[in-house]
Length: 354
Image 1 (cartoon, helix red, strand yellow):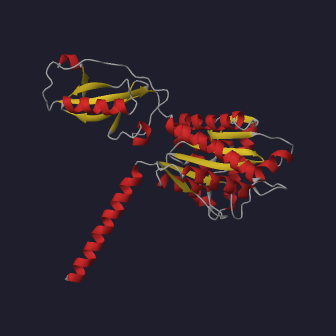
Image 2 (cartoon, rainbow, N blue to C red):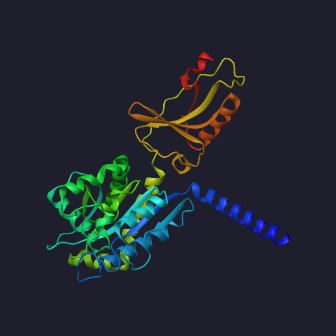
Image 3 (cartoon, rainbow, N blue to C red):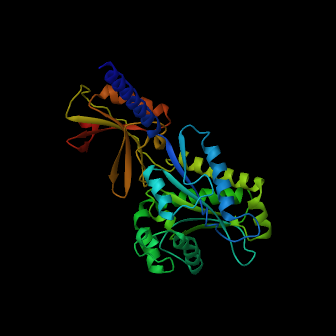
């Protein structure tokens, strides 16, 4: 009996530990870093280092810097020279319920082309974009049972590319937002040539349920850029530019949200169970996840769709004194234009009518 009690005690301690750990990681901003290619897939041919090696070194450097921020959790699709199937990369990100998926690659061309470019998912393909998409997606042919995993998908067919975008449509705007910051950093901080933000149908991003970008860090086939990409200095500078963009993305998600100020108070502030008060902290066009990292650490966030935009609220209570306290908390967090709203039977009503 004592032995059974001992096992039960150990079980409950373990259960409690797992629960605490889960709570501690719930509110973290999860970034999945994907080093392109690997193992039997070396990537683009080059006289310098192999693409798979450069991509991995850059990813590990990015991860090392991001992990210094305790509010961020970093997950890697690979940390060594192993071959991963494309669908596995997306599955890792989805299983983690990630907030960002960032895939790192290097470009190649028969000419001395050079410069960076960052891709997000789209059905709009120029001839050049289609060829790049086709080349990146053809790694599928190196996989076992690719016919089963990709359900008849043909990397060389434009029609197949169109079908890739349907599940990513909700995240395109946020993906472009991050991609622009990455390219701006390459151009303005490193003074490198930016070939811009582009949209194309890449399988590695099509099935990820979060904002996703694929960064081509430069052309390994260019004499100058290839040497730079293969150097520790180049990899360190590239990584820092990407880290800065990710941190800026994380911190500025609410940057363009507008709010309207309301100063009414109810004539009768006694608690009424039929009335629900909330603190409106933001409103705007973006559909944001109601996680604390998006709202300066505030928890108990709710979202309401209004026309073509969304409103975001902090807290919910029938006690007006309590909601005033919640408003003070939001104000101290930086939401200086926040205000209290009231609902009755699910419908918003004027506080002055109470």
